Length: 231
Image (cartoon, rainbow, N blue to C red):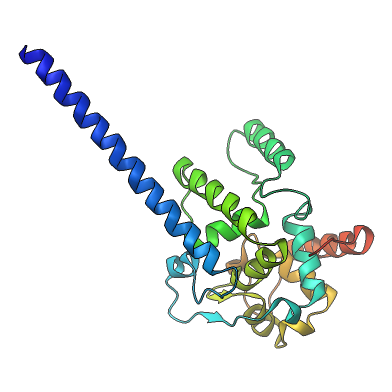
């Protein structure tokens, strides 16, 4: 009898624990979703990613979509997510290719995050890599795609992406690196900014590298040859 009572108590405790975790999970998802709904119309003043950098002086000025150079929009889509308008948050072909490449190399050397996934991470999550974080990122990405237009998702991305040490968003990036507004960026300048996105803090104002110049030239060539469908 004592053993049976013990098992019942353990089972009851397990059920309560699972129930409490499920409720906490649902509350967290509702918190994320409420912010996403709010940000369909209003702009975030800061993001989890900005806060995680803990930079003493953040350069960030929000600008609306129509005040960002079309060249930068096209360059970013070409460089970061060529199928942006065609997928629903996840580029499964790119994910398979990245998985195969990482498996061959025996380590993570390639990623396949779409613009929507990057927005999910920048708005809400830290930069740590874990399966739990990736799972939450996937859920938030799905919420973004179901709630926001592609235009709004791209607008958010262009305004919160990191473009230097403490430099966030297209307007701050354009002024920091070129001394002009985001609206005035040329195709070459847009391609260069898109080229540094994977590792923006390596490139300080007025300094470049042969690798970045070659990558920017490749992006520019793709923009001219293929064009880039943007919302």
